[in-house]
Length: 364
Image (cartoon, rainbow, N blue to C red; front, side, top):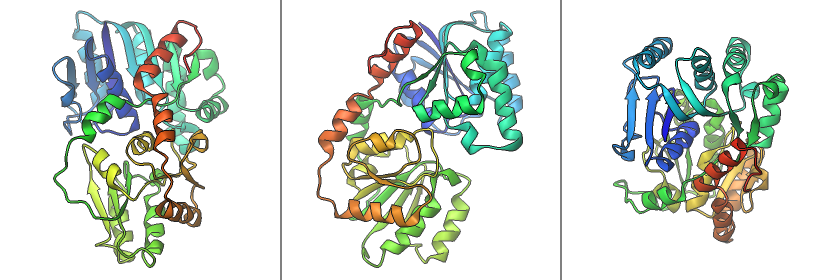
């Protein structure tokens, strides 16, 4: 099969990890991966030569889009069996390109990466609506990560249900890939007792809340450290908060980490402190390594996961309570987590896509 995957850049947020899992699953087919930005990391090179990676020459978004369209115009074979995307802009862009007949595909599978109508307002939201209207008519299957996300999408843009088929398929996890990465040792020495969180440094991740909670915990847990894996625009503000709270030696901002699993494995508690998410992939990754996981109710379905210590969003006291509960817990959630994750495996995810495309009942 010939497969096209389009991404804004090669960062490794949840949407990018999802598309990389798709590429890894199909790596015995012919896969073209296009990035609408210059190369920034080596996040995709481990997939090997069977996946063709195409980076833009430009970092400016609109110029990169024009460059991508120009590349397509030069291609002799513009036909793909599948196209996969997972951002509103790239979903819409591919839809527009298909309408212009610059590309052909048998199946276009798009995915919503977040709850657009909860996170955005004003001109940005209007621009998203424009992409929904112009591009989503060509989507054969639109995947929402949770029922809540699907309901929010339809409430925010009711016409979407007439433009395409919308189905809920929970986020996948590649258990085979995780098993390989878990065995890789890291060069860094880890603290003996620490909390860990991971993701882009943006306001939605709630790292400011987590740092304030950690500051409150220090008096009763003096040896405890906080590790945050990831980078982003909020780093400077978080560093100022850490300095203000006199936690410079206690909170460790590791920046982008290629392999998060050893950090999750050794942590006293893994924490998702987000204000809002589509669904945090990192939560599944944490569950694969550690039976002591805390999460805010930042996305639909999290409250249905067995064994998670739950906290209300935007609530420092409740997050503190949940973390303390995790620190004091002796319960082994490994059997519960293993069963849950088995049902989220990438193989089942792909099978459900095929079932919905063929108008059959999903597997789970």
